Length: 369
Ligand code: NAD
Image (cartoon, rainbow, N blue to C red):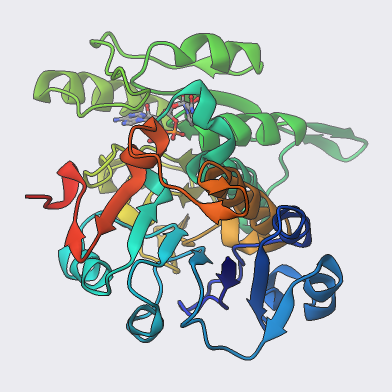
């Protein structure tokens, strides 16, 4: 059995889907691993480190691989070079691109989109959204501090007092919680909001103030949020509009699976903020929580900077890669039996993530017949 780890080809992607540790673990199980030369460069993992772990470093050519691990959806060229029935595991970006999914199915691979991992306790170690969102939440605050023209902590000096920055985190999932913790460590006064009531305790336990409108709990049984009713959206907007005026930095992370990101910071709200304030919109890839944010741009609007950097976790590839790689390895472990591969269709994690098999789309959310 052979596992292949190609170099990522999407623009700006610096992560790699294996680490020396995961390679070592695969080799221990009696599996061969090939890694494309240079695949780890963006994550500061040299070819030598993969070779020392037991991988064969190759220039390319994955046609005889039984398993292909990727961070992002592979190029058409790579897909068409794979053998039918090969297993593809990665962040396959299943939402909003039917043609891309058809291309995956058409290549005949058995494909697993790791974004669809069910939110159950057993799946936590395989959850790429969590491992990457945690780093993104941290990086969002660091980037905000970089673009902010003032300091985060309060400083009392002989020349006067520097006030602590007020940081507001919108969306308290994995990224939001790490953003709260990071902003607190930097000495900011932190507040946060979410539409899932369970987040109140988490926010308070991190020493931040919880800002919550009187709305119905929008938590789903799957652990995600659902879209708010029109009435609740209006209540939330009124509350947020008042709070936003007083904030220096806003980090937005709000997402609803399979839907465009909800608009939380309108242009009028941005108008109400002080010049020099910073918004980091982590949802920019899914349309943005602020309509003014633009992917990979810093938009300046009446003195307020709106930072729309995409793939923030990828900017910390040195940490993001080993965590991503471990998520994939934990998932692949479910299928490795006695040095061979066995797909257990009854396993919730396998069933929940499989999008294509035998030339067809097989996931109920993405066009399975
Ligand atoms: P996410 O990335 O889907 O969304 C980010 C946050 O935005 C969520 O907290 C969501 O409630 C919030 N949000 C959505 N609409 C909003 C709005 N209009 N206003 C304000 N906030 C809004 O979420 P996530 O980070 O993936 O995590 C969601 C939950 O799932 C968390 O509680 C997390 O701990 C849990 N989780 C469980 C597992 C597991 O058990 N295996 C794995 C990962 C996450």
